[in-house]
Image 1 (spheres, rainbow, N blue to C red):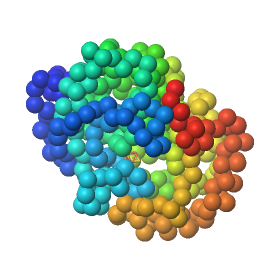
Image 2 (cartoon, helix red, strand yellow):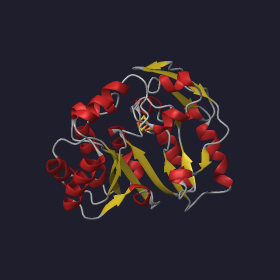
Image 3 (cartoon, rainbow, N blue to C red):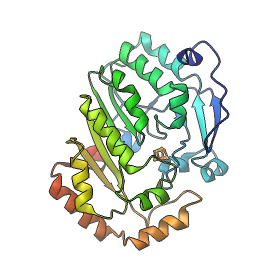
Length: 283
Ligand code: SF4
């Protein structure tokens, strides 16, 4: 069983997966007290450090341990090899009812998760020993694999990030992420399985057809949405697509005015639109 590899035995030795170099590291804590944007949550839970999705605007990249890690954001992932063992220590002081955000600086369903099932094992532990109020944040259809577990939580929400309707934009800003259609289909499946679901347009990137985009969001059957602006002028981009991203922002005329206009169109379809930090309140 892969699960045991994270508790009593050695973790699997996968050194490379696709474009990402994989390392296994011991960490000091697995439930971290939150601050800043996520301060309303009790804990954040990140099964991994680094993220193979490598979004070019990812703020987490700028907290990476050194400039080499920052410049190579998207091309390395550290597996927290003792994550499950650390979480098991909380069995004696359960975090039942506490609010947990998974994850703030990585994607819990990036490709390595399909191989090693660390997020799945952590979910089992949370489900059977804690029942926290859990929000899962992802850009990955792999989340549908765990619907059987997600359905059993008393308080859980899956947030799927969908930032644009344009594959051109997606490929520049989120070159290593799953495509938009796959994400929409995945969150639709999660919701259809009776799991509380939300689409987070965080940040909202340049959109080609705002009306059709808003309709495609509604077509998922989901009723909860959060939106947040993307600030290209303030934006720091990770290496690689920096110039391309800035060019695309110019091409789409993605100014603050255009953003407000598009947000207004989306709001005409979805009046109850959560905005920024307020929208991210714990469930
Ligand atoms: S999926 Fe999230 S953590 Fe990963 S690179 Fe994108 S924004 Fe950063």
